[in-house]
Image (cartoon, rainbow, N blue to C red):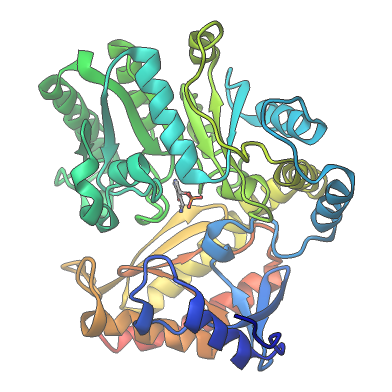
Length: 450
Ligand code: PMP
């Protein structure tokens, strides 16, 4: 069927979207997607001229902001030179991206397996761990998100895995530390850490250490609430993995590439996993790319035995050229250091100040450009502002909060009873303060539900 070309109005874009685009994670008739006309730096805008400061970085991926001219130019240049090529060849952009990534990953994570995104990275990390160990079980945390493909959604802890759970053979969930809602009834970080490690040891003992291929954790669990682990936890998990010959997988899809104020979040605790997944910030999502950084020992397993896995577009030259340009921009412009400073001098202090004035704020936590504000009905009981996994009317307080933020030109990240403050790592101090002022007003709306 032929049709008229779209006139570039928001209404036409929206009409075609509503008619033909099937959106992720959505009841198709209950959503109202904004028609986006453009984006630059920390902002995007619609066709009516409404401009929003993006406190979400998309889905926490535009770490260097939108439309960075150097990265756009690098993509254009690569398109002119060699727009695509199959994965089984040595291609300049791919070689260079792998070299730059391996230079920055901790320890001996020196081999890079490229994917098209985060979930595929998790799929492959789990497969590598299973083949390397000859074991099948995978332990992962309840409060986690690892992606929407088969194994990735099964190792995920949040409710999005429920409809897919029948495929989760060998996946065992455990509780990772989270002092504010401590699964261990702990009162101090030290207690939380100790009890969480004991709980993990107990889980391993009852599952059978010799059946466990991998423990997978987000270094700083992101989607589930930006829960910065207590000192000693990740080192403790590393030690447990070494003791039982379990592969330690750290998922840095969200926390990696500058988000926490270091190239990779694992650096904060001096821990090196055996496998590390990445995506998002690797090229700020300009072209889909993800991957697994692989230790020497696991790479050795596949030195003379084929690795049974691969993707048609693995290490796509366009995506890799974008990664090379992004990593160079981050290094030249000091983006990682900027994110660290932003957390220490603007976002952290600014959010804590809001917490003092707004009764709906239960806790503020995070680091770098990676912060969560947990909203509650009651600070004493810590009852969440909306129930776990609330939808429809039950979610009205968070919907009202989000609407108020948007009215003030701020696009907020909302998940369950939390708003995450996850702007571009390149956001200026002035822009960050403008966002905090809009957040201040939106929190007054949340306060009405306390
Ligand atoms: N792991 C983590 C920690 C993530 O945050 C995400 C995405 N939010 C994924 C994996 C999945 O990545 P993708 O959506 O690119 O498949």
